[in-house]
Length: 287
Picture 1 (cartoon, one colour):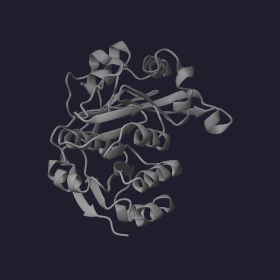
Picture 2 (cartoon, helix red, strand yellow; picture 1 turned 90 degrees about the vertical axis):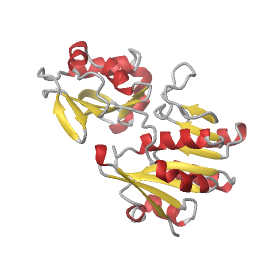
Picture 3 (tube, rainbow, N blue to C red; picture 1 turned 180 degrees about the vertical axis):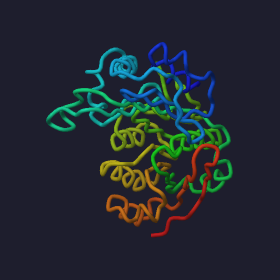
């Protein structure tokens, strides 16, 4: 699937025409009211069109991403983002009185994260991840570090290697499915559940699909941590990702301290650097 083309199709027509064709290094498209639109590639953000963005341009993107119904995706917008076939659209603007329950009164910035398949990345990590498939493996990097891309590739390789994998794809970013057909290849033996929360989805997969491994992206909430504990308690392996610089740094945060000390995760895959300079490091997690 061409994630770059999917993201481009959400833009206003003149912006879409101005984008460089087939830019494989592109990671993000950003629209900011009063500023020229930019493209992030190889770690550098550069303008690709001289016309400054207006709020109507941002609304055009959101209308297309929501199927012309912003009301239908209001719950997602309250979380600060919207997903459309694997493209995650981060949202900034003015929040109405009432905080997160009030929604947005106006929009000032959008960040379109471009999904991609990167065949072969993390290949050197596969033997250790496969050996640890009955335990817990955690992919760690700061936001935008490439966690979802690495997770997607590991799922594909492990699934093609013979493991039954249940994928909790809460935001439809791992599979980018449309009409029941996955846009990204997650392997021959993967079963994908879209739209369910991680805790609910993990339990559903355990009851219905008999997975050997459950994969999920971005553990960020207390209920996500509980889902991880319940999966481990059922004797099923887990492959997940979380925001952080390292397992050691995450231990200093109360939400992750008990989890990392519980022994659920025994292996950490750390992503360092940006763009072509990304590096993948493997470390053991000790209690």
